[in-house]
Each structure stands twice: as C-alpha cells, then as structure tokens.
Length: 118
Image (tube, rainbow, N blue to C red; front, side):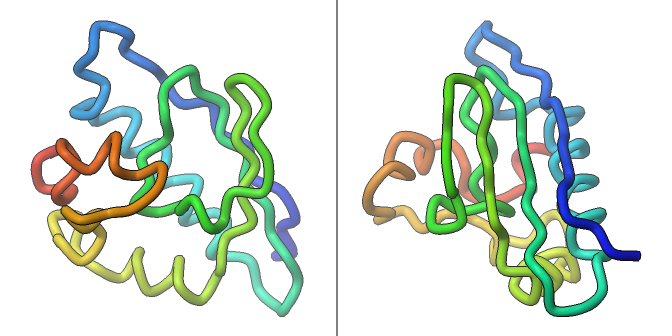
C-alpha cells in the first residue's frame, strides 16, 4: 500500500522512568513497521506526538524535519528503517553510541540498547 503519513501518540510517564516504558517502545516500533511497509520510492513522514523525547533508536535526529511543542515530524530513510526492524529487539545495533554528539548526549546515558527496555 502507498502510505504517506503515519501518526502515533506515545504515552509519557512524567515520573522520570519513561525510558523503560514498554508500551511506548511498542507503539514506536508499530509506527516504524507501518512506515516501512510502504512500497515504492515516495517519501513517508512519521508524526510522533509525545511530551517526552521520542526514543532516538528508530527515528534519529537527522531524520527530524520539524518539532513544535509535543509534535515531532520525521522523514525516515525507509531502507535504513527496514534494516533496523530486521534486528532483534534486544540488539545493541540500535543503541545510541556512548560518545554521541548533539542532542542525543542527553539520552545516551540510559539508552544503551533496547534490551534494557524489555
């Protein structure tokens, strides 16, 4: 099917433990699977609605097109996204490097790999 836009509202546990929120992880994985299921060479955009920082493993800062308040608009690289989704959920291949630069340095201390989320 031709999909142009995927929208997902992610829960945000404001108590500070949202980094281990399994429901949040599964919703973001589902949005990635729907976006990557699009056939053809057209662009797909993903909107994540969340008061918390989206998990940067699937949709990176380089793919972020715009952010307004709690709305994050991404234009993912579908080939790269499909490769990421083929990895096991516990794979550290999806993790943010410890020496991450830029906006990921804030979250790199707790996101070593998806295994700690499960």
